[in-house]
Image (cartoon, rainbow, N blue to C red; front, side, top):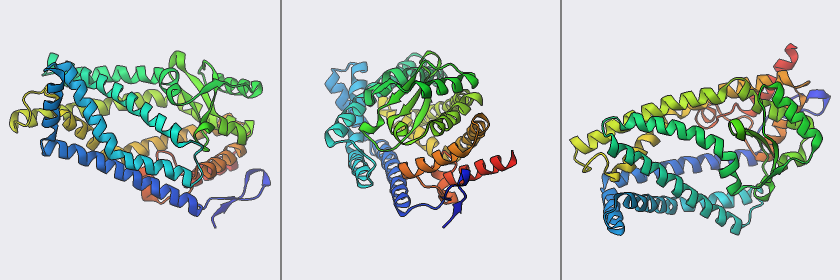
Amino acid sequence: MLETPKSGGGPPLSLADTPEARQYSRIHRWLSVIDTGLGIALLIVLVAAAWTRNLRDISFRWSGDHYVLALFFYVLLLTIITKLISLPLDIYSFRLEHRFQLSNQSTGAWLLDEVKGFALGLVIGALLAELVYWIIRSSPNFWWIIAWAAFTVLFVVFAQLAPVVLFPIFYKFVPLQDDELRRRLVNLSERAGTRVRGVYEWKLSEKSKKANAALTGLGNTRRIIVADTLLQNYSHDEIEAVLAHELGHHVHGHIFKSILMQMGITLFGFWAANQALRYATFDRHMFVTLSDFANLPLLALVSAALSVLLIPALNAYSRYNERQADLYCWKSVPRVDPFVTAMDKLSAQNLSEKSPSRLVEVLFHSHPPVSKRIAAAKQFEAAQ
């Protein structure tokens, strides 16, 4: 068994994966692949079999030929179909969490979350679709540039609103009652050069036995959230190490850099979508006009294909950022021991793989494996 001495002279930490962690991670990977494959297959069938035009015609009949209302009905139908196809996987995922004893959520609470997620997805999806097709109708030649600019603004707005509007739809948050820990985390954030608007306890245990913490929001909504499952099982030093890592992303400007990168990807995506729509409309005569919203699945298909192709590169970039954040953490806390023990405990509590294969790491991991993070922390400690 692969082991490494524990910081502080305690028993060694095992870097080998348990059979449960390997099985749980393997099943999750297959669920992700199947879900993505079904989504892409649905989009291809909708376009290739002309089903999307049937849905458009139904939507216009329901709306009395009112374009805006018809587009909403189309998004509603598409959302329902997508949900029905993914529902068996969602049910299996819910039962999987209980099977591995990672969930505290009742069936009723899960169903309520599913309804909330469906409604929220429908509202956001309909608003975005209405915006895109209003832009296409207003400026068919330059719609993709205007839409790119609008989506960039919306991305920033959503990042600001998420902690105060979106997250509370699904989770409860209360001000952290531990005064000492709150002072330590606020001081840590000030040393990192960012002012947080509060430190909140995230009532994650109502749904899950997993643990997490994060620095969320932008500007006036920036706040620290710490899961109650983390507060229950981790020392103040370990929680401080976890948050020091999150603050490392701020220090290195990862949020701003990620926004810039996302802007570039989105710009290319809208350009590619414009090319695909023009080819399908004017060369293949699949749609009446560019603003024929029956082409929405084609837009989504371009986006999905681009996302799948970029997965290895985006994961590699994310792992690079995570390594930088780890390094900041080690420099910010007195000792690396709490970081090492926190990573080991989080991996065990969340049933994540510590030592996945290189292929799995490249295709599925946005963070370096825990075994590599612990080894790097040990090397940093030895070099000091």
